[in-house]
Length: 186
Image (cartoon, rainbow, N blue to C red; front, side, top):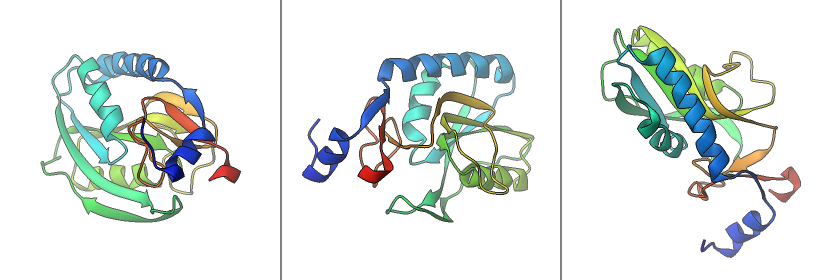
């Protein structure tokens, strides 16, 4: 992959913690669980932009039931990779009233982004709300944050991770696996 010097240095200091094949196998398992629990609900899958694009895009062909896809754009991260206030950039473009909603995000970290998305769906009177994440980070959640997702593909230690939808300063989302960088190398 062609990278600038800055991102090549990050990539060189990283380790691949989940190669693409392991991510694919985890998505297969998650899709089977979702099909068993959600198959007759005609759900709306809400992609949390931007990080949820690749996980959801790879999950969808694995699901064998009727569903609708839409998106929200809410983020708790700034460009410096630090957690700050939530920023709402886009709300769903469909009515969630009475619907089963599955919020799909790249990672469960502090739990605040998923909490805000759940609260939004409940405010819009969704019938039931589930959460699904590619990665569940093993760390304490912020007070009021979501403690665990209803569906998760993989778990990860409290590391800075990127690839497969997860970014490093808005780049490297397109790496085929999941990579980690030591905090001192950030």
